Length: 531
Image 1 (cartoon, rainbow, N blue to C red):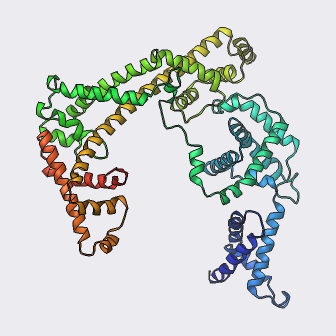
Image 2: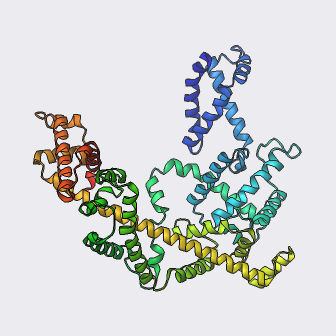
Image 3: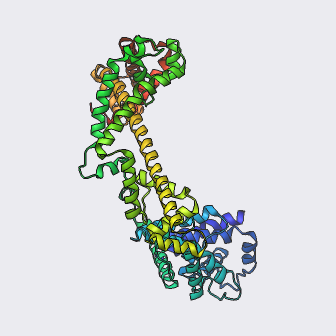
């Protein structure tokens, strides 16, 4: 180990300098470092190398210089043995994790190289069959190996890959982009693999030069609006804005009629349930705490929130959706499935939540239904042609194909309806969180504005400008900064407890620590508040 440590620093300097002679020096340096580490930390290899050293035969070179020469030869031998196919096929097939990592690297390289879907998925599908064929025929086969470690593939390698691609493109786990494409030829496979190599050759340069990761992420960022499909109708509307207005009116109606509802929750504290217990960042109580305070069980509180607030809002949302779609959700789902199958089946997008649900639903269909969909909407076969295809394998006739196709569509429509229902629940939940979080926020903000101006400025510097307390002590040398901030927090806490007591008649004196945590969370979001 002492000898390795003696050589290691010189090895690092040598690798760094030697890498500058090659393209992509940073990536090359990492590669050469890994390569020489395998040699330096292998006791047998290092011992064998040192035994060959003779200062008289080495033209007076010292041991470090001799070792650098040995490392240089190792690197050059590795480079001479490699070919472009090393970039594509040097994959560990025994590890699913490592294989998936290489697949993700190839996908990103193709994307950066300007390749788009469905081509990316088709190239990768071909690649996963080509790699084991190439390694078996060219790397591990002693009859075909020569002095070059990664020899040029030959026509039989591409022919075998094309056969595997064509025979597996209708398997249940095959991507829709693959099953929707026509049969491939060996020439196409060769062209695709060379495109992949070219992409991988440019990939290190792009990673090394480009530091603007945010630009890359934003460019390929999926849609964040789950209701986008609803806004693509002939008369687009601001759906979320309408929902916000309708929900606000419904909350006011509910609050005005709380005395008339049937519930075990005492009338005097019914209005406190949602502001205090609905889960969000500034929640002051959990349901169990509230239930204990008013002498009921937690289930009563949960049912109250669900039946009195969530259910009416869901009803309002369903009405709004029906008005927006100008039809029932069932009919809209049927149209959506038909449009998806006709226009986007061969290149679906998971960034669209409803399309993602359809992709998942297709993957759960039985094999015959999946194959029929792939032939009908991927290969554009009609029912008779699909029946002929199945007749050759003695599976189905035209009437059975039509029946299976209809059943598959029905299952996809159910998936769309399920996803719409999930979106409705998410929409109501998100709106209620935002509504009641804003209610608490307004109370704390009003209390903040009642603090002394000097305390407000101190809090702003600490939480808006993110200035550490040690630095604040320099700006305010006559203050005990830590104590001043603590006093401000305590005043906000007292104001919040007083608001709960005045508005709902409930005391949170026993939950002071919990209220203090809410104040701390609020202060950490203060940088985004317009004061």
